[in-house]
Image (cartoon, rainbow, N blue to C red; front, top):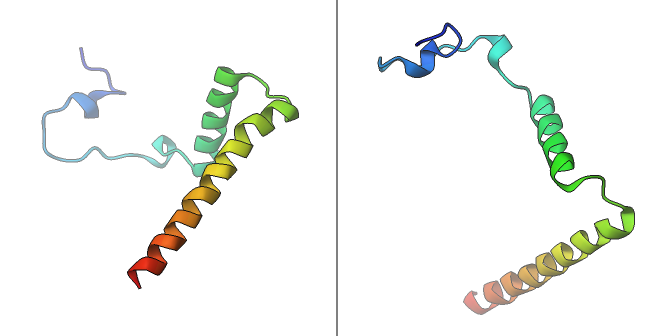
Length: 76
C-alpha cells in the first residue's frame, strides 16, 4: 500500500521525486546524527582510550605520506 510519504519511492515513473526544503537534511543535522550514532555504538570514550585510536591512525597516515613522497621522487 502506498502512503503519501513514500509514494515517490514506489512510483514507477522516470521523473525524479521532488523534495521540499523540509525534506532536505542540512550538513549540521547529518553531523549531529552521525555523531549520535557513533556515540551509541562506542559509548563515551575516555581521553586515555581515545589516544589508543588516534595514535595508530596518525602513525599510518605519516607512513603513507612518506611512501607517497618517496614514490613521487622516483617518478620525477
